Length: 273
Image (cartoon, rainbow, N blue to C red):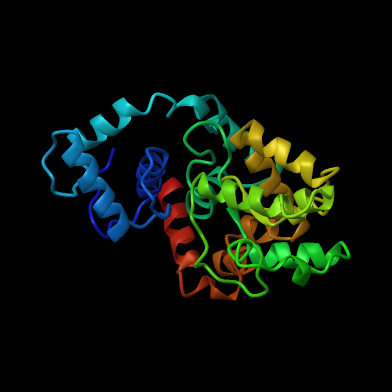
């Protein structure tokens, strides 16, 4: 495990924060080691007879992992080299290009600690999903629902980790009508590649429920959904031609350049090829 400290940015920070959140610490789960995580780590170190320095090195990792006995429940659901080889053959892609995309565009491990796929719930999408079903969201706006139902995008309600399931389930429970559960599931992004649930129809899933069931099965299903997404949105041609800018624009939107996704993809491809 990598040594992490205040202001570290890494997928392993997400894993660290998942563990801390599961242990009861109220922190935002992301890939950034912020003030809240620093405070939680120092508290954990204090309670476990460790040096209280906020640095998550070998000793702190050992104590964290020893206390979490369900960490590797989802190990049987992880992608293998053969899965990427099969994907490359299926879509007539160079394996190095597939590995580059898997490294840069995926969110790392597709499952949370335990066995649930990673999600991020979007309250503004939930608003639109309700409207698409003929339901007026304004009838359900309250102080209680403020963190799951809002008209414009904001990141201030993100919790990360398993907390996103709490938000999604809270949204689904705003009404007993089954449309609310479907709208809530459609308003979350799922798995390694964070495919929005509302894409289920264009990706040829029978229902959003069917899509979600697949996301629970294996990272292989996350990759399969990603492949369908690339096909439907005509992005495979850019992978075949190694047009990283066009691919990044199509997948990440016009803000891709600010995050240097095209440059990161090109570097990852060079590494794997």
